[in-house]
Image (cartoon, rainbow, N blue to C red):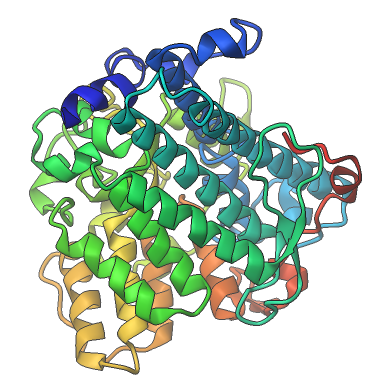
Length: 469
C-alpha cells in the first residue's frame, strides 16, 4: 500500500518519468476546485512548489551559486562584474540590491503560498485522498513551508541565539491571508520546528523508509525518493534548525538518526573514476533532498564562464578566487579535481554532460552536512567523537586521507567552505557562528560580523501592503 500511494502522490508520472514538473504552469489552466478534485491534482500542485523552488530565481541559482555564494566571498574580489559589487559589499540599501532582495522575499513567500494552498485543500475534503495519501501530501507541504520560512529567517532576521526577541518575519500559515502576524525571531524559529515535527509524524510511513535510494542502479528511480522532501529530509532539517538555535542535543539526535538510518551513503571514489558521461559529480548517493532542474548547466555557464566569440571576450561575471588555496592544492581531494576543470579552471560542478544518467539538480540537504553538524556539536564535548565524524567525511573526499589528530572550529569552517561551494550554505554558517568573512582581497582581509552583513532589510512596502502570496 505504501508504494501504491507513493506512485500516485510522489510525482512518479510528472516529476520523474517525463520531467514535466519543471514546465508545469498552473496559472489559469483550471479552477482550484477542479485541480484539487483528484489525487493527480495534488501531485501537480506539489510539483508546482518544487518547480518554483528549483527555478533560477530561488535555489536553482539566486539562493545558491549566485547571490548567497557572492555574500560568502567565494568570488574574486577584484574580478566580479560591476553589477554584483554592491551586493558583494553588503550594501543592501543600494537600489539594485533592494531589487534583488525584494525578488527573493516575494518568490519565497509565493512558494509558501503554494504549500499553504495544498494544506488548505487537503484539509477540506476527506474524500479525494486516502488517509495515507493525505498524510504524504500534508507532510511534504508542511516540510516545504518550514524549509522556506527557515531560509527567510536566515536571511531577514538577526541570529536567534543572539537576538531571540528581535523582530522576525511574518510566518504565513494560511493561503490568501493578506497580513500574517509578525513574529519575533525565536517565535518564528519555533514555528519552523512545529511544522517539521508535524511533518515528521505525517511522513512516518514515507516510501523512503522501505528502500535505500543509493542501492538503485537507475538514478532516476533513486530520485523518486530524494527529489522531494521526505522523512529523512525533515529529520535533517530538524538537525539544521536545532544547530541554528544552539540546541546541540537535538542537533545530534536528528543528525545521528539520518546517518544511522543507512538510507544514504558517503561518496564511493569509484563513482568518480569514470568518463564524464558516467561520473556522479554531485555525489547523489548523499542527497537527502535535492531539486531537479534541467537548466543547471546554463545557470553556471552564465555566471562562472567567460563568453568568447571570434571578435571579443567577456570575462566571467563571478570568477572563483583562490581555489588552490581553498583545497590546499590537494589533487587527492575529489572536490578539487572534479568540481573544477584541471585544464581550464572553470567550475564544472553543475556542468557535466551526464544528464542521461544523472539528472541535473541542486542539493538542498546532504549527508555530509549531518557529519559536519555532528563534528561541530561534539567539539568540546567529546573531541574524539568529533574527530571521528570529520575524519570519516574527509576519508570520502580525499584519497589516502591523513586523519586530523585535533580539531578546531576553524577547521570545520574550512571544510564547510570546501563542501558547499555553489550551494549557498557558507554565508549562513558565518552568520550562525558570528564570525568574520575572509575576502580574496588583501586590502580588506576579513569582513567583521554584524547585522549589517548578515541581515537583509525586510521590504517595508511588502509589510505595509501584505503582498506575500
